[in-house]
Image 1 (cartoon, one colour):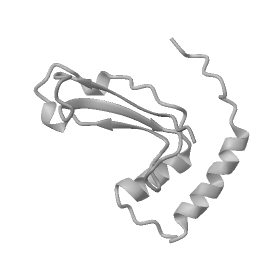
Image 2 (cartoon, rainbow, N blue to C red):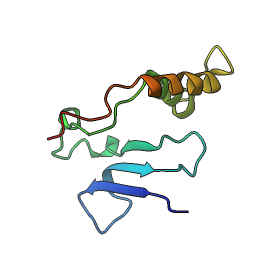
Image 3 (tube, rainbow, N blue to C red):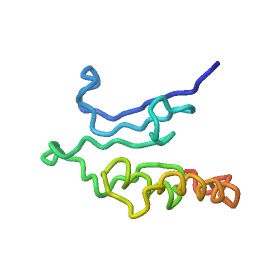
Image 4 (cartoon, rainbow, N blue to C red):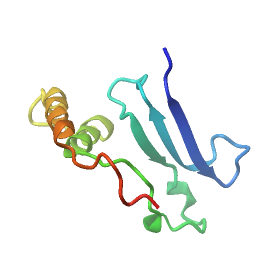
Length: 110
């Protein structure tokens, strides 16, 4: 089975794989449960002295559903939902969002 996976990153030191500033990742079939298929990591807290003004950077991402945002709060930030079935409910709601999508083409591509 073929699986599309990619990572791209920005670093001050491309020879040091741990010294990245931001990294975008995509896995067609995520290998870790509950990991978003496409996601962005920012490793910038210890880099505030650098010349990059991260609040001015526009990172390209796909359109996100509210379900993606809520799931990230639960899974990545350990926010406790009132309903213990929140993730299955969000997954079901997300499928409806996918059916109603109107942004199948991105007219804002540079």
